[in-house]
Image (cartoon, rainbow, N blue to C red; front, top):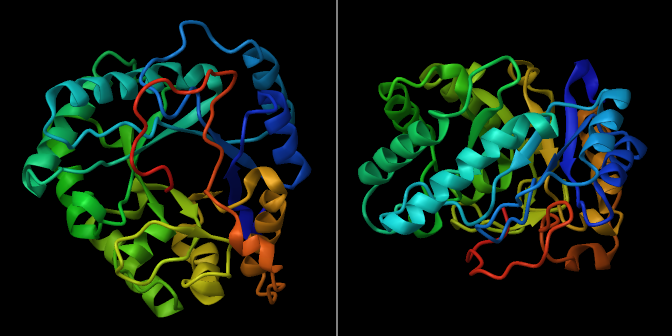
Length: 329
């Protein structure tokens, strides 16, 4: 656990089994995990729950891991103008919110999406309408998952690049009559950097946190995807890197992990090499950053690892439908 009770998790692969992922989280001293509930690169959702679901839930409870997050399928785009694609996206989000309690998940994380050239205002309106439709049939009980909208690095019309866009989006959602406790936000640090937020210094982090508090309210910030970045500031690129080994660096990430106004947030790693032992490495580096210790120099091969997290859900077949263009972030 991080200092002052903050909770740290990671997006862990489920290829070896759901229970094995829980055991891995415990073995590397994580407090929680983020998972896919199903294949992240296909529209079709499984008809039956995973065979390991009961054992997985039992082990989660025994170890006290949480809050669990489900990352929605990469294909989802609630902001785009294509009606068929939009309808499928809404249906997948509804499905993830419906099954989340059975996975013990408190959060369903989804990318805000791209307006695909149709304009920011139209994209925001579609997102708000899609969320209203997805949430309508899902009971809002004590076990209901919170829908958590993730910021964008800004490539290709991505929405949610700054506080202004998130304020407008949350305002449009509230105008649809959706209770504020049902929708929160997630900040991916690599996306923030790509979108042009100078979070490589404590001052830069403090300015962003202050703006979020003033414009939106920090109670709406539920998750942080804790990643360094291979990309340049303002490049609009989403390229994750090991903590402290990228362009953001130790000073900014350390401040994000220790900012006094972010104690309530859950942090999830999406750094490279999660299934090659670097989940433990980055978990250790997060603790070092939070406690102000210098970071070890990583070996050259660590900097060549592709991808940012496992791309399969529990016991799913390979995708047979078109994959999204962007599979990181």
